[in-house]
Length: 120
Image 1 (cartoon, helix red, strand yellow):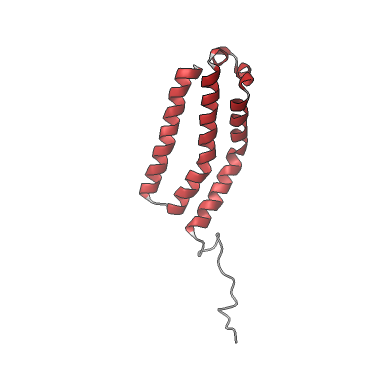
Image 2 (cartoon, one colour):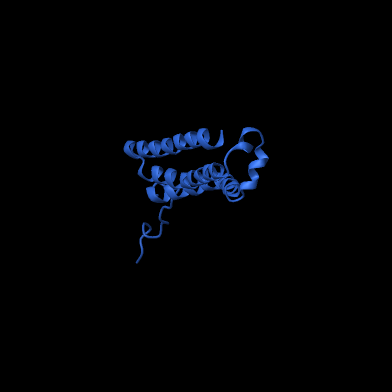
């Protein structure tokens, strides 16, 4: 004989019983939906060096290798962002948030340096 407690539905991600891993996956999926178009644009710019002429000015005079490398680094950063945010939400500790901030900071600094060396 089943009791009333056995017939209650179990909690999912959005209930109080949701696991942190599922919350991280959900947030990562939402972030990926936001960065999907910029990822495809960055990959498109990286795989078609002739798009360098679209930007005009100083970017048009940059080396092709630097231009392609710059856009691949941007695409990798954008692709890694949903995973980093999802992992941070799943762990949700000060140490994890510090690691994520350091990784994003290193990528940001690398993009700025590469932009100064190759693009501008």
